[in-house]
Length: 490
Ligand code: AMP
Ligand code: ZN
Image: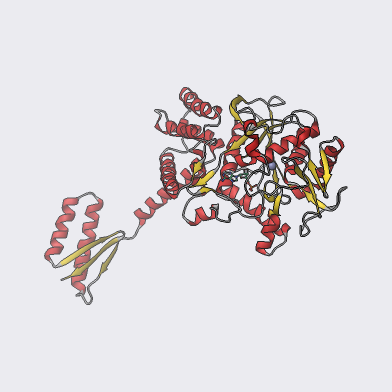
């Protein structure tokens, strides 16, 4: 399987430290607000990657942190703690905010068929691990204390800009517009491992540490949580592209300094979902959520398909027109699957199965080309083979795509069956819309209307027309309705 690696800038053959086993780490959400559908694009693509690794036979252990402390409003260690900002906005405690938005995040994931990672660890659960790691970095000479905070000393590294060597100057913290320089830092790129109360007096969550009462920096959490659950070798680390710098760059710096050897070989970054006015961001407060999509009448799985139709390494522009055409495509796809005999017990045509199956795996083995993998589903529907083979293939592909293809098709087939049965059983209602009609005349008209309906049912259209003419001759005008006929006299 070939997978693009941000570290090498090439599509590498995916190789793990221990054959057959994948230690996978995902940077989790900062739970101070709802996840926006941009965040969820990253989690959808990471979910597909995880599921495809399992599908390919790997034994995957996936770990995700929940950032509930330490992520400041600027990634360059300045500004307010995002959690505190959320708590102030909603007049709640940080822990209440964290619980509410963590639950909301996993509820959104459920709706998008995103599997929960094997381990989900809130940062506030791991304070002792962070302290041990920060102390280890101090002991090894990779960290220093200045103005009450503990900093990582990037000048101690042979190489700091691991992802984007040529852009070192552009990326340097302190030269970016709007980012004030922290005068306690020895080097522009140094970052905080542990803050003390000297920096933020109103920080709500604080812990005792050898360096004073304080709280951890953002980057240390992912390194320490990965070490705790995956050991010293991580095979695959994921996140949105904004995480590459400074977050992942700093994670690599501190993790490798701490363990003393290369730490994670493969870095998977998902490009951003943008609106036509720019990047979708939580901090701006204006963003789209899964609930909003639902309110507007979209099944969340339509958004999943919207994401899968494009490659994870390309920016994706969100538009309502795009969602509408994806909704049409999804409904048509489901209708086509619903038209198959979903419960066929015929034998699967193995030759056709293998040929169609390899189209799917070829696409996915080629850097998770989900758009081509979706085309493979259409190829199955068009193929000249029996329904049992088609259903078996779609079931298999959907283990990875998770578009609810068979479940939604079964629902659509059941709904169509129920509608047909209801139509067949519907009572034929005759309504007279003229008041005070003579009862004998009324009985005669209704008998003829019923006879016309019976003629139509028996496809005797000439007979039905003749009866209508007879009624017209009697001064009766008919109006056909869905469940019967109404008539007027005169
Ligand atoms: P956060 O909750 O801000 O820590 O972000 C959660 C995840 O969403 C991270 O992996 C980010 O890199 C990713 N992310 C943030 N904004 C976007 C976006 N517009 N499109 C795709 N992924 C994003
Ligand atoms: Zn992280």
